[in-house]
Length: 388
Image (cartoon, rainbow, N blue to C red; front, top):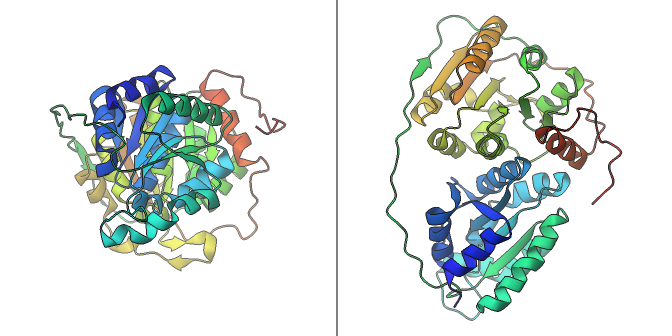
């Protein structure tokens, strides 16, 4: 068995001290160490954990994701449509529940047989973590080299790999909503383009705009491309978690996560995580057109959900219903002056441009440009950047 504390110290020595994930009994000692000694963000699900860690990487951290292999299936979407196209490298530990030949619960049987194949299919480099500490340290150095080359790397962890690490007593804070503004009048239903223009015009040199996948990112790009923008091309539902990871690790910047109704419905558990960790430098804006616009306008069920109440119940300091563009501008200005984790909800029309372009830059170029911007680089694009 590995001495968990010594292994954790080695992780820290080579720069890995930010963790996110979902518990697993095979990894409980390493998770306990992360909670006791590191910076650990408990995700609602494994896909959110990947997105949180990815945001932390954009903010300059070297993140670690911890999960059970059953949850690896939950993480497929961000791994293949966020981390792969954007070349966002993370270090992962995934347990091997249901290992062939070892008795386990029936729900783990199939995933135990396909865990390694699934990682291979996603083009994620992986190895079994050794139970010998000296060997495991060498493996960590190998993993760090892959991460430095913008490639994710996962350790597959068998039962009994880690020695017991007790969880220290934790103090739980409560995050309560301080201001809730519900619907008061009719909605003016501006277009998404109009709403994005207001958001874009309000930003300054310390603002990052993260736009959810689909037409939101494409329209923001057409309004005005900027080094502080990131246009998600996949990982639907993850923009709020990506924003959380970035906001927690880059507190000198204001992080704006621009969401859609189809997207937020997909991963509503992330609202609870955001509310608990509650970074004051993050604002979460939901533009709700009650439709999956990018795929033909099929209806969502957003009309049946009171998102202002949901965000309020999840602990967002402010949860505000916005009726028109003037209110949107005023609420953004208000947040900038006195920042607290804020949720803005605005209904928009279902109409959008038929002919809508796509960013000319490759996703990894957008990511590299944003990282350069976050580290004080000049604002020009780096579209000609070489591949890693």
